[in-house]
Length: 396
Image (cartoon, rainbow, N blue to C red; front, side, top):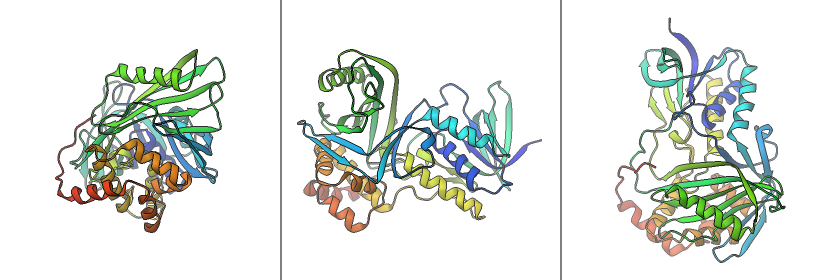
């Protein structure tokens, strides 16, 4: 006999866990939810660090490693720009801590279960959808659900006019001597050679005087040989930060597509795409966590009200249009990415820029921010973009 649940969530990453948590808090008490996590191996996403910003106490503060109100940006020539983002806090969550927090919450709610399995296909059914999966011991099982939310990575990106890759490698380092200011994040440090079409920067999240996550990031069309990331980090830590002896306690790597592709959020009448697979990644920055929270909160409230829980658009059309112009200019070498972001962060209050990146600003405010960018280059990209055809996007 096929088990039936109200909701099946495929994938226990940021999107899947967030949706399960929201349903646990606001869903009907009679709701049954099955969270299907990929077994250990290539299908399970690696450990990650997620960053976002919000005002005041947040829903996931119990999993936050550290938060900051002071941000710094370094220009390519070394000028430092500091700003306080009060009332916002820039927050860091490690995926292991997030998973433990949500698992504790789900364990207290009857009807919520979590199992491992590799989903092989999803079929339409008259009363919802049927999920077919293979368990870790090789057994095939089926699960019937009224609604299915699928957060698995797409096999290929939708067609786009512009696609760049945000690729990064980071070290969790520990120093013998105090080396970091735990009160301030190095949000973007451009003191590194820049690619011809794209940008490169370092990112440092200080956890204590002796520990930090330091990452090297590029926006470009292709990833680098692995050794190049380590070489860049060595140079930055030793020559720019001036750290002598240090140990590497852990690493993280990733590739995030930055694209103006149109992501389908519904793949069947009862099946929805969520998270990065549903377009939650902000095309101009790669930030995803905050958009996931907006999406999952709206879906949980819709289900509680008896409505179809379709994921809302993760980013406003205006935001997506501006991002498309930026990506096009960056990919074609018309925009100098390091100078672009340096101008913005040196001329606009950082709290205001962060709200802009969350789509929480008005049209007039967006125009005011746009006037601090290279207006001529942005206008040329704006006029050229409609003539470009969408074409298959390259994979990472």
